[in-house]
Structure formats: C-alpha cells, structure tokens
Image (cartoon, rainbow, N blue to C red; front, side):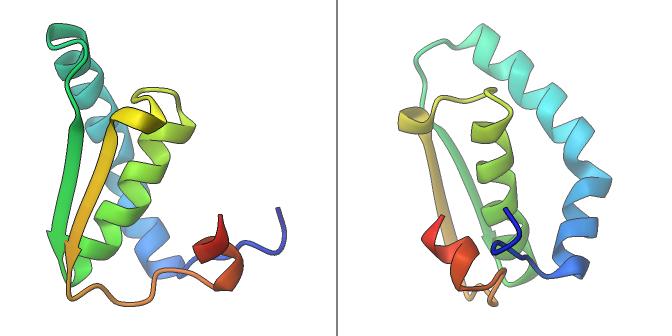
Length: 85
C-alpha cells in the first residue's frame, strides 16, 4: 500500500537481520506451540522490534493473537498510514 511508509534506515537495518530472526523464531514456535512471542527493544531496538513483530505476523510465522511488542523510547518508525495499519 503506497500510503504506508517506514523510515528507510530502520527498514534496511531490520532487513539485514530478518532471515536470521525468521529462522530462529520459526524453530522456537515449532518447539513451543501456543506460546506468545514477545519482541522488545529500546531506542533503535524498539524501532526494529516494531518492524520485527509486524514481519513475523505478515510472514505467518506467528499468529497475530500470539504476538506482542514492548518498546521503550521508540523513535517514530513510520508515517500515519503505518501507524493506522
């Protein structure tokens, strides 16, 4: 959706880690079905945690109802369209 935009620096930083994160979380979810997956971070880590939890849900690695994000001191990750989404 063209109305959804995220900060390119945060996006690229997360994408550098995305394959490793997806693989590790897939393994953990397989070993622990039914668990809630929590992602957390502070500052830059909070921005990456926001993108990470959305990615895990969008990639169907973690069900939406089993995903939580806790962030502290997060910068603005995306525009209003992203926040609405």
